[in-house]
Amino acid sequence: MCGICGFYSKQKESLQNLIIMNNTMVHRGPNDHGEIVMGCRRNEYSVGMAHRRLSIQDLSELGHQPMCSNNGRVTVVFNGEIYNFNDLKMKMKDYSFKSNCDTEVIIAAYLKWGIGFVDYLQGMFAIALFDKEEDILYLIRDRMGKKPLYYYLAAGSLYFSSELKPLMKNPHFHKQINEKVVGKFLYQQYINAPDTIFQDTYKLSPGEILKFQYGGTEKWTYWDIAEIHNHKRISSSYEEAKEELGNLMRDAVKARMVADVPVGGFLSGGYDSALVCAIAQSVSDSPIKTYSIGFYDEKLNEAPFAKQIAQYLGTNHTEHYISEKEMLNLVKSIPQYYDEPFADSSQICTMLVSKLAKENVTVVLTGDGGDELFGGYTIYEKLVSAQRKRIEGVALHYLLRLPLIRTKVDFCKIPFVYRVASESLDSRIKTQTGSRQYLEALDRILLSKEHDTYLEYVEGRYNENNWAYRRMLFDMDSYLPGDILCKVDRASMKYSLEARCPFLEKNVVEFSLRLPFEYKIADGESKKIIKDITHKYIPKKLLYRPKQGFSVPIEQWLRNELKEELLSYTDAAFLATQQIFNIHETQKFVNLFLRHGNAGENSGKNYGKFVWSYFIFQQWYQAWKSNSGCYI
Image 1 (cartoon, helix red, strand yellow):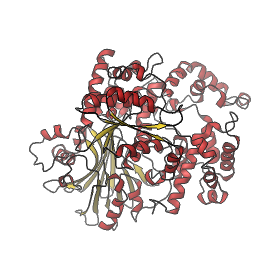
Image 2 (cartoon, helix red, strand yellow):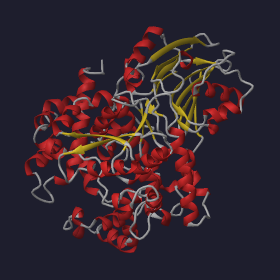
Image 3 (cartoon, one colour):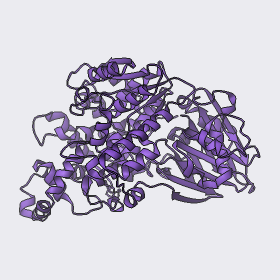
Image 4 (cartoon, one colour):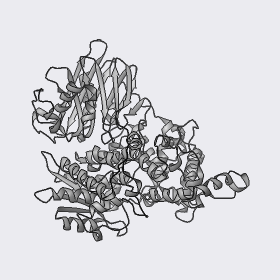
């Protein structure tokens, strides 16, 4: 896991500017760095490529990047890991390899198969590849979006990077906020690809390739969740599918344990991380290192369960109990490492467990992806119930359109399953509905009415009538890369720690997309097939309990320790300078939340996450506007 940045530009660029851009990502790659600026056949253009290295495979200087092909035609900078690089190497014996690293395999594969080489890769990757013979720059992002890749387009030039910080350091970058995505961020708590917080700046979407040549841009998708789900189904029995998935998971874990540095695992006490750590321990000759975070509040604390699982498996387990003070201390650093607004509060706990693991290892295995692939979130079960009420939902939808009824009914007091069934009949957003009160609040506090829709009108691309399954596919396309994987990438990279996700192995994902719904959720049982596989390694009694996850007391903080800072962000002069939020409505909304606490249904108690998103956006804006921290 590393960091990359560079440009294909007809602006005046310099090696020194490229070095400055690259130095903003020392945390992503503290072991080595490299920068190069090359000319093009059209003299007005130049190409710069830079890399920060976190050494994982082939720790020698032979793994240095930017890396060039033997014939000088291809130059690559690459962030990630190609787990099948040794297998690919065997297919390219005609290429004279100088190293034992996966970067050189990327070069050889491109020379052998052209840009179609990406179909052969298994792993996580963000790749920038420059073909000097054609003067073409390719940007490539892995299938599930594990590795980030940003790009900025201006005046016929392209700039790219693993984070926004390098782009902001380039003298040609204009930090103009993309106000159209602010509302969607407040609602979702993250900004989904291809959007970013800045104008003319984008994220490459998962499974996407961008081609850039002399100012011209072309993009296409080489791997797509909807396409795979829509065209393939397995005919295996449940027992056959369970055995095959178990073998695929075992292969995925083994591949991710290959490294020239120590490898450990996050162990939360839930099924996904437990399965990953159980398989890792079963294939290891010695106890693997596992790490857990504990809370002093027993209602939130999963550490004792994780410890029991670790003892059963025989891992070398380390746990650290964190206080609110430790968590609060990290809040101020959020804009520095999440360099566009990001409000999933579990980022704080993820940073702390990453810090703990980094004391002993450089690579950790995680259980990320298990919930989205196999139905682990409670929303999926709620959607199953909501779909059963779809006929009543249609009737309620039209009933609520009557002015006399609409003015007398408090929509947020209607049971959630009926809200989902009735709020919208548009199949493109069906599984994202049920929270009209949030959308109406956004309309009130946002100054501009010319904003992007808060919802993603994409569900029609999934040929799936089951609402819960459709939402799982949607989450794989959006929430997983935009929130979960972004959170883990920034949190782990803060401490120069590489996080690997066996559930996101290509073969595992594609197999999951072909599974019948009832293999995932049946009779109210979520993640059925994953639970049954896990029980082969760990007794059911050590795992069977309600899902918890990381929890942070954001409402308590906003009403106490962070209250003064929150109020400063609603100051009339501050809001007037921003010209993003309606002053009166924003102050009214925040004061309602602060004043009434948890007194009643309409007091603002349901808006804790919403107010937290607003706080995080303003904190980010203040850091960006004042040029403090990393925004220099």
